[in-house]
Amino acid sequence: MRVAIVNDNQNWLNWGKLVQIWIADAGQRPVTVGHLKDQMRTHNVQGTVAGPDNRTVQIRSYINGPSDPLMIMLPNKQMADDRLATVRPGPYNVMPLFYDIAFGGAPRVSLSQQEALDFAYRRIGEYSVNECC
Image (cartoon, rainbow, N blue to C red; front, side, top):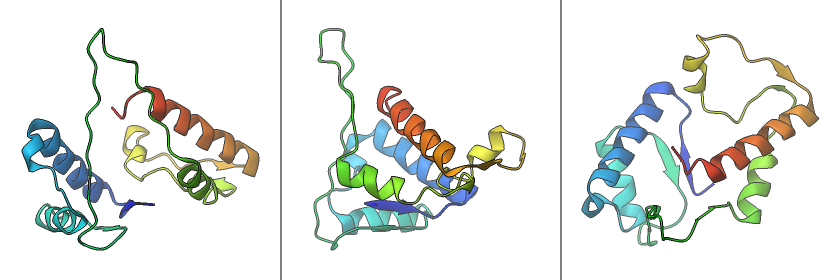
């Protein structure tokens, strides 16, 4: 994973607020891994970022005009394979904890290996067309 956010509700909120800063002001977007790490520290986001501090970071915004091309963003094969390799039977383990808030803290159900994979496929597919929001 290129950016791994520690799976904690407050931490995900901190990350989401940092992303909102980048949405509101493209000039605030980090341009290197070191700059991204600095911003994460400043905004109390716990996580790891792959690569050396001088690695370039590009944050892109969707285009959405009626005459613009329709963009469907997909993970590359290695990203998808890496994520799917983490899927295990039992309570679905690769969905951030903050999703539990929407379900009133109800326990996650135990899924078979196949249903867990099917759920992961659904999440990847949903993410690709809902444009990350």
